[in-house]
Length: 290
Image 1: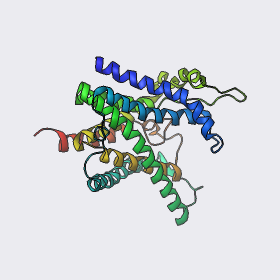
Image 2: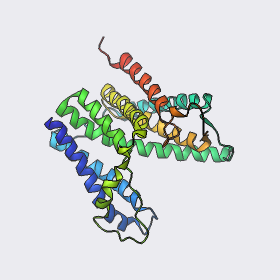
Image 3: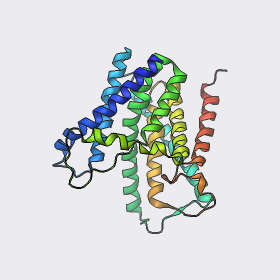
Image 4: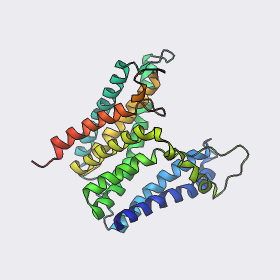
């Protein structure tokens, strides 16, 4: 129990620091970027998450590059990353194919399907997927997972880190009202409302999908003892979702609409089942003791 309380303390610290640091971050970047304040809070929270995960590892006595998940030779790391990247693409394509076959999804006729446009979209999706996965995996399956694994063991580390990973996706800040002054405590004042979606039962299928994805990533972390496979699958999944969301569109009033969440065009009970099957197969084939 003390290990979980310490873990939760550092999570709360990351969010509090992010809400405060967002203001100076805005002052520094505002001359160059025109962003909504809620985006500054999100970026500041990610940066503070990296810092706090390092402090957490230091507190647990395991701060190192290896604890963050960057171990082994560079060649083997990138080989595993690339191989896992293909699995991430395959995973999402299976889900999207089922959605198309069930008539939940269709190609968007308003999009441009020229080769030039397609290549540009792929590059943007790849860059975005790699950046998102690198940051999130370094925090969740890197520092936070390693510290909790040291303090509480593998089972609790897998479950708790996966619950956290799913939870943070539903912390959504609203935009600051027009004309309202922004200062150091603005982010703190906005924080209670950012957790409003946790009162909605409609997020359950979306939440469970992200939780199961987190479990799969945590098992990969345990199996390979680094972040290569985690980053690869995560990047492949994010990039593919961005591509399919751009070139596809959801069909309303479909009889299978309950399989997809109202807030997301890919995740829902269908994706939860597919991810659960992949996770169970991986565990039985790669991790279960013989």
